Length: 281
Length: 281
Image (tube, rainbow over all chains, first blue to last red; front, top):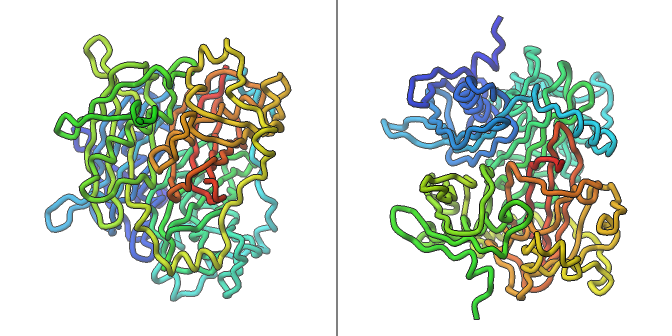
């Protein structure tokens, strides 16, 4: 069996560091293709570039979003910026052809390594002694949460993306769905991929941009185009339901930041991201 | 009068998008040159590239640090990734020659615009109505804070950087200086450039990496090399003393994140950054 994420983010090397991809229509949301999905397509190209070095896991991926993607053919150009013992860095840009002209959709810098081999027992013991690890929020049980699967059909029609995920939102941060946003700037919930594919470091690039924009909770519905998104993968996720939290603290000058934290089923922080996005009109 | 930041971060166009720079010894700290200073050098090159479009202010700059810089000649290569009405994006890499071979020190993606012309009265009014703006921490008056100017001479010798800044640390988050770290993962204080140069958007790229590593407050002294740093400039700073806060929540796998928030003298959030850095040994 092939999971849909693997099928839809597959890349095919065509030499010279270029990779072909096909952006699948299932990841469309509003006026474009989901930013986290695009990051995973690009992330798979980088993974292939660095496979021979054993650096197959993202640690840090920063992307600037340049134009809105559409479903259909795309390709990723990669260039190795540095190779090292522990980390390697690649510059990668995803393009789509429009009337025969390549148009850059997003450009990224990615530092990869191996999450199975970062383990430094000294620093782990130190870290444990420090006890410094962001705790996951306490969420109601999943059967008391608001499932995206129950979104109205007219909403799902413009957001096929919803069918890729099984999200169970904390009702306290989902009241915007019934016109009563909490205005705290917080959306959190349980997360898994709809077909049950286990999460891994590249999949976390999707998870950090999977929940609705945090601006929904501010009473600002509408699409919030990402200007820049940086994801840090902090550990390899354990299988099972993840917990995802989106927060913002500041909306100003037509922009807001959205911070995302992801914990695995063992309660360990596995990814963090921040994006700078345009305030919805 | 020329302020030292302007002198030391000046770049000279040599055509083809290349800029010469001279990394000044005053910005050395521990085993390298300060990452925020390097970002400002690179940021000045990007500013020149986009000057004709009126996009002279950074909004988002993400840098991956590839190798440790040294004082001396350097150059920045730039490539325009996208130009637009409101934002333009440039890829830029800072190199130094080592035995005649160019070595990349940091590579970055920078999205610039004009902070004087983002003002959209509709979204500003909405933002004000939302009341969502990260509040600055309450700090003791500056004369009750711990001044970096009072650091021991043996410390200043390895960190000439200290003389570039006038930092007055909140004593509650500076007890590590006397061997009693709070272990909260928090360092905050008042900030200005030592020669009183007013802050501007490019200077904020320095400010986000100016305080000591937050790991000092965890009882982990030592240099914490940055793997990746993304800075978002949220507004043009008002003149006067800024407030800067460094925090971390998670130390794991030999890495930690350091979040920095900067408020101007009017109490407005003007910059945010996050870096992923190596835990000091």
